[in-house]
Length: 141
Image 1 (cartoon, rainbow, N blue to C red):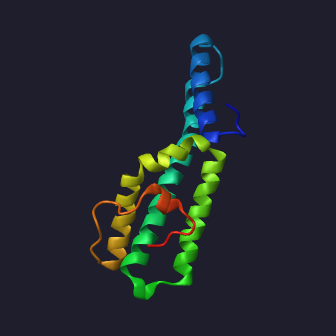
Image 2: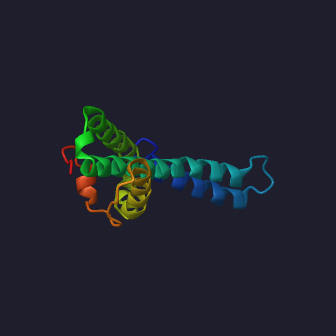
Image 3: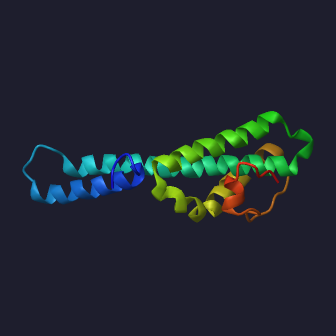
């Protein structure tokens, strides 16, 4: 796996390689284990960004659906921006594409909690949309 093809997969592969190297170079001055953890954390940062952006998209989709009188170009732009920026993360780390569907439930809970706090409006406990709808640039509920 190359750095340019899939950043997340590369970080995980490199962290694993560093840990294997650490077992062979115990006397070396390089702190292999902590170096591996730092590289691995770069990939985890991308996973957190995927979840965060999904939560924001879901928060705004909920507000869009449950506050139709407040719908605005700003809300639509925010949804579009989050979708676009999420697509950039996936473009850099395609191995995270399936992760989006895996964490939809958790991201929905995060987004719902924020939307509920902002609006006070009751919203469904379970995500009413598929991951395909959430990511679809033309979808608005």
